Each structure stands twice: as structure tokens, then as C-alpha cells.
Length: 254
Image (tube, rainbow, N blue to C red; front, top):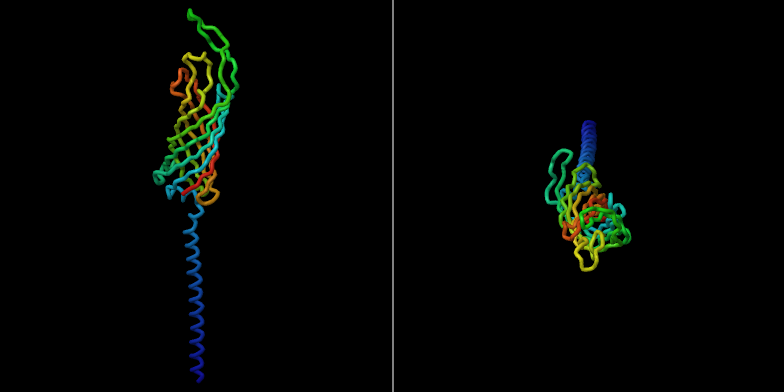
């Protein structure tokens, strides 16, 4: 009877120990599962990397404001529109320059330039015998309005370890139409050839970033360095050799 009790006690203790070990193993497995789940979930908060991996299509509104440089430092520029783009390659590895190539385009229904009011300027005139002399000539000015399209935006999205910021560099080219000939130049009598053009072309480069505030949404900031010229479509082509614009936008990612 005593031996029977000892055996029974031993069996109960053995069962209890096995139960504790099974429970411990279950907790350990659950802990590992949770840990692995946590590792798998980490990319979910890396919004920039997810956008690159998906080669996401994106679109959104933006506004530009800037200033002319050098002889055009009195010119102010304001425009607003919509931009759309899509990555066309996976991430290409090139050390610190690793990144992804993207094509984009923008349309600006509002394009405007604010220049000094019409005034006179001292210019160099040429007499009939070929000698030059200073003279006062009337120059146009005021506010100009029109529209613009930039069909060629070539963008390089840098692949960094940043989770919510996507930096980029781009080159771009576009066309501007204004309701009056731009930029303002020396006025000529009605019926005589002269002046600039209602059509101008822009080219330039930009540095910027997308700041993801949540999945598939970003606030965008970039600085554009632009050149504007009519390509001699008008009789005169003074252009705007350089201007700096700051662009602020909001993007929806698919």
C-alpha cells in the first residue's frame, strides 16, 4: 500500500513537472512568434522604403514662389498646379548614390510673374553713322499671367535609411505661355517688329524631399533653380537667366 502511494505520488509530481515544462515551452514559442511578428512588421513604418519597393504612382497639388536673380532680382514668380509621377526602376545600388529613377510631369494652370511697372531705362543706342550713345527708352512691365506645363521631370530618389523622408534630385524642362509677351522689354511703336514672346521655355534642376506624415501621404518641399528663355521666338530674347523658387506640395501615394 505504501509502495502504491509512492508510485502514485511520483506519477502526480511527474505530470505536474511535464505540465509546467509544456507551459514554459508554449510561452517561449509565443514569445518567439511575437518577436518574429515584430520583425516582420518593422517595414510597415518605413513609409519611404515601402513607396520605393512598390514603385508607387503618386500625384498631388503644389504651389511655387520665387525670385529672379542678378538683373531680374526685382521679378517675383508665383505658380500653382498638380504633379504626378511614377518610379520606373527598382533601387539601383551605387554606394552613397544608390537610388531609384522616376519620371514625372506637372501642369500649372496658374503661372504669374510680377515685374516693375512700365518705366524708362538708360540703354545704348546707335546713330546712323554707327556711333553709340546713351539714351532713355521706354520699357514695359507690370504683372503677367499664363499657364505652364513641365512634361519632362527626371528624378532620382535617393535610397537612405530614413523611414519617413525621401530625398531626391531632379532635372526638368517645360513650356510657359503668357497672355502678354514676356519678359518685359523695350517698347516699340505699334506695327513695328520687336518685343519678346508669349511662349517661353524653362529648364533647371531641383533638390527636394517627401516627408511622409502617414502611410501613402507626404508633405513635399523642394528648391528649384530655373532658367527661362523664348529660344528666340520673339525678335528679342532677354529671358530670365536665373531664378530660385521654393515649392511646397502634398502628395497622395498609390
